Length: 301
Length: 156
Image 1: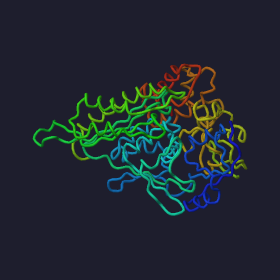
Image 2 (image 1 turned 90 degrees about the horizontal axis):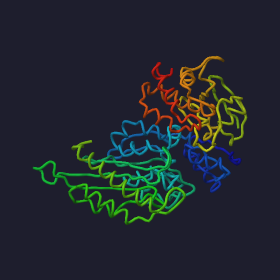
Image 3 (image 1 turned 90 degrees about the vertical axis):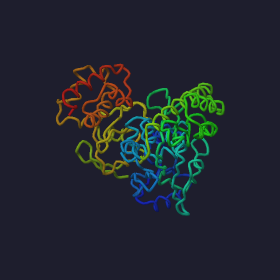
């Protein structure tokens, strides 16, 4: 259980990182928090010849607001995001989901960018990015480009980033007014990757100005982890809900529609049937909690 | 590669291979065998140490990454041989260990936790120690030890 030998670099700037990637190509692997990569190195499932450590690169950490966008540096640790009052105020779905990533020792070291580019099909954060319709900024030889959530995840453990590119920033839209959120997951053991997890936001409006508690759903976004190669958006369920008055029966109908739509795989952790069942139950539960929060949250943030 | 790291307040400089894990650095280079190595892939929590005050898994960190960092191991909890940290005292009093293999990891997870949360509920304690595995106690007496330490002043 020891890693195979590798050359180690700890560059201080993004320019040096990109130069190292250009020099070493496919032989190089980027080291962020290491909470997924180092186990793979220890078990020799991965044997890169070169490790480029991002931990000393300037400008990759921090949390800030840019207008209607919450911006988080790729090397910001899970624990910092979890404790951030700014994140809790602007995008509480992330606060709720990130507390379920690993254990505290993992979250003290693991990074938000690392979790996303690792693209584990059972990970929490890719589903959050997909549900929120967020994006990431990526630095490469041709400069910086922005990649939308739907274009980021290609398949198991694979993103659309090129070998000579580096994720630098995660960008999430600020939660709109009158929007509720919820993240639900079931894992075999506490702190494990989810068997199935679901991230939801739900926006409501008053149907008639005179009758305040007569609500209509004006927006809904649902993304699941653990039911496919990448985060899976529940587009049919979302379409079913938008424009209709919310009710528990409606939420159940949407969850059932989604359950029928997905085709999860059977693996050592769970059967396809069990995953489908969990997806339905968790989606309905998450929609219910999101609706309650949306109804409670008046205008403003 | 050369690495200089402060461990329990003492600076050490060593020439190490980049692939040397922090856990093996502590045990084999510095002889600090209080840090135990269990699963070596970040699941069991036995190797937990503090890096700049925060609990991390030393089997998922390379020694070369620790250049300039301050590491605290279980040996650093007490100033002198023979003395016990209040949390260690509580573990002894409440029978929070049997074989003791996992104990250092539990202590190093819980010391910063109690500093931040001096009066945790039982549910919060169980959440806090969920990243550490114990195969002997069934956790019951570990939870009691943490409650005891908290009652006596936050384990500090």
